[in-house]
Amino acid sequence: DTEVTQTPKHLVMGMTNKKSLKCEQHMGHRAMYWYKQKAKKPPELMFVYSYEKLSINESVPSRFSPECPNSSLLNLHLHALQPEDSALYLCAGARDLSYEQYFGPGTRLTVT
Amino acid sequence: DQQVKQNSPSLSVQEGRISILNCDYTNSMFDYFLWYKKYPAEGPTFLISISSIKDKNEDGRFTVFLNKSAKHLSLHIVPSQPGDSAVYFCAASAMYSGGGADGLTFGKGTHLIIQP
Image (cartoon, rainbow over all chains, first blue to last red; front, top):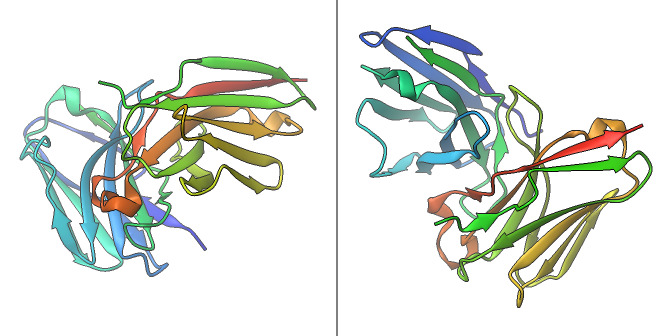
């Protein structure tokens, strides 16, 4: 079983809103990732959690805030986003950092 | 600087024939390579991987070949089927040299179209 689920599937938010994206896996994965994918571009890494500890990606603006409440859940908190942040946000899990990653279906985010 | 390159944005192949997708990389630290298939508005689906200690890995209709000296890998799909039509991403990681926390570096993808 390699299922990673993400909610919501679609999200439209204004620039002053606060929202959260959720990712869930029950495969015992100890590494979890957030990627951002713009149209016709490859996925780009945002954050990595290994055994619930964050590896900070310094190029990600602070308006994106990740959280790993437990080994099965990963959240991405969004605040004061810009229209250029509109993209497909992908969550992935892996057994640990040395294994292949399995992706969820993504959340299509539109910032208006 | 693009570390993983897929130079063919699209590829059209007749059903039943072999599809060959190519990928080049520049970072010598990469030691683990993966291929993902992606449909529009969905997450990438893992297909097959290969570590740098091997030069070939096979799984059903999919075979990945790695040429380390040329920093080149390819994905062969035989025989090609209509359901194979999708965007294929090549990805790389310096996984075994401690770079797993850097995630995957993806190429720009190749849109494979299987014609009936």
